[in-house]
Image (cartoon, rainbow, N blue to C red; front, side, top):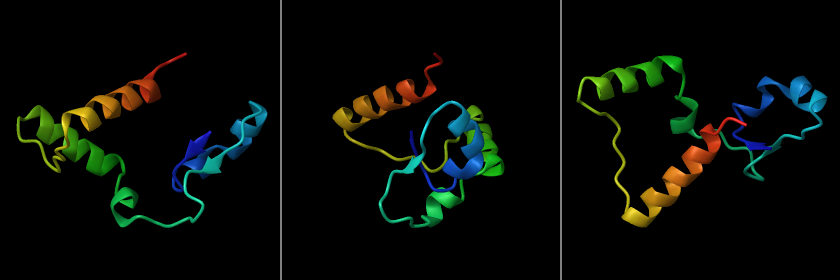
Length: 80
């Protein structure tokens, strides 16, 4: 399983119990200031603005990137 530096250490014992290994996606552990700000308070703020019809932090990409990003997101959210 690959994961971000801030997320991976949450459950190492549980991952070992499931015979899973956790590896950082980057060979260099670098704290990205933007990714580090993602917490429940900021997620809630973003979702509340989205529900109110005033999306914040909008990122626009080309159609191909959007399509494959959606595929990746759907795979991450898939429950097995």
